[in-house]
Structures are given as C-alpha cells and as structure tokens.
Image (cartoon, helix red, strand yellow):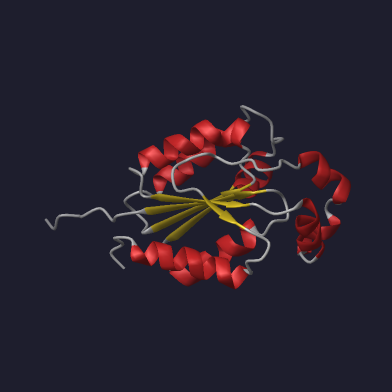
Length: 176
C-alpha cells in the first residue's frame, strides 16, 4: 500500500473591520492558489451556517476552528478571513497558529473608518447595512499581537495585497 505523505499547510489569516476588503482579497488568493485551497469565511460560518450573532463565545468560534484545522495536511493553503475581533476570537486564532506549528501568516487591514465605508459602498452588500451599523461594529487597531502580524494599509490596492501575500507564501517552504 502506498504511503500517504501529509501536505505541508500554510495558514493565512486575514482580519479587519467590515468593508476593509478581506473577503475580496481572500477570494482572489483562493483563485490564485488554485485547487484544494480551503477558504474559511467567518461570515459564512456565523451568518449562513449557524445564524448566530457575533458575540463573545458564540457557536461559530469553535466551528471556525474545526473547519480551519480540517485543512491541515490536506490542503497546501488554508485562508481564514473575517472581522475576527481579538476579544472574542483571539484565543482561538492563537491556538490555530500553534496548531499549524507556526506556519501561519497574520494580516490586519489597518484602515481608517472612512476608507472602510467607501469600500463598503462599492460592493454587493452595500444595501444590507449602512455606515451607522459599521460604526457600531468598528474596532480601531484591533491587533492580534502575534509575532510577524502584518498591517495592510489604505495605500495598498487589492492587487498589491494579493501580490504581497503570494510572494510571502511562495517564499516559504511550500511544496508547490
């Protein structure tokens, strides 16, 4: 019987406020990396699968962790994206980084509120909620505080961010 050798998996975590561009970048990365790239979206798990509010200790936290862990050894790339507020998700995220044996890159969309509102108005969800809701959810500089966490700024385009993440990922010891 042929021995199955587990794949070395890279975890990419994209965090930031609503409207910052996380989902757009995550989907671009998944398309770029190709087949068997697992994309775990906080909104999909929380809103679509479980229909729970984003509160500390909500059911989605453990399911997000489990789905993300599932990709280790099966996929070369696992992308986790969402607001993922440090207060509610920080412990889980640090455990995931440890679970992936440090083979993780963490990115935070460190954008001014006004920029997130502008970006929100240019997407399909723009009618689902407005500036008032975004302001209520807003967390300034909600850093995870892990080693190597990289800030993504308003000067960076989607293409800049995708290229940065791809180059950092490909520079690692991936088996691609």
